[in-house]
Image (tube, rainbow, N blue to C red; front, side, top):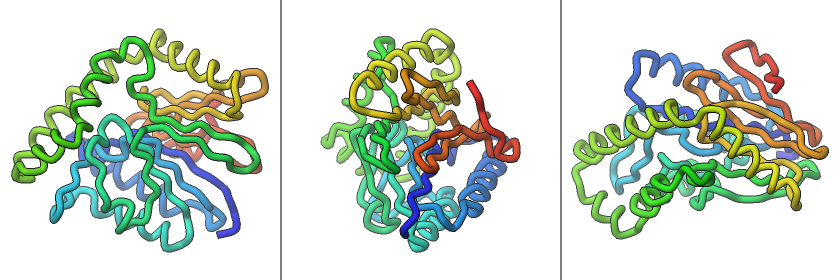
Amino acid sequence: MSCDLAYFISDAHLGAISPDAETRETRLISFLETLPPDTGYLFIVGDLFDFWIEYDHAIRPEYFRVLHELMRLRKAGVEIHYVAGNHDFALGSFLSDVIGMKIHPSGCFTMTLQGKLLHICHGDGLIPSDTGLRILKKILRNPICQKIYRRLHPNTGVAIAEACSRISRTSIHVRYHEAEQEAYRNIAFSLLKGAPDIVLFAHTHYPEIRSFNGKIYCNTGDWIEHFSYAVLKSGELSLRRYAQENAMIET
């Protein structure tokens, strides 16, 4: 596809048990279905699923609808990048080999698009108060631990993962208030003193966009409460809410 119009989403946590789970999934799929035909890129900045555990012969049925839509986009020529989040600790080959995504397992990567150097990072473990999360990430992403975990029956593995994901989501709501958001801004602004023109984070579930010396920091927010996403068009980044008729977010 010749166009490079780009969209950025994160933190949908599909599969999380909640009263509005089906409504949130339907809204996200509606958003994906209505991406304009000149879309060239879709960036998933982590935690699309509440957790992703890839067994050799099992995929959670709750993910089928969105996986089908992502495959449709790939067949239409959209290049999809998936940046691993803290709930994406066991990414395997299915998303890359079957769906056709470009996977970034480290949780961060840099690329040039529309003449802008983008630094894209889920953001978990970046700030000083995330010590516990950094330790947990090393354990969960350890190849030996993952190999042992995959030996569990999927029903057991999913139940354990659901419990861990619930704890993680609760901690996000409790911890990431103004002090933590300011810490993420400071990290982004520090990065923007270097080569990147745009820094994109996620993880906090708090959407915002700020300028720094002519450069841009953006947090893509979430698809649980804010239904927010970013758009890069002609080198200009904007932040919008799908739930409010694509209203622009100004912060």
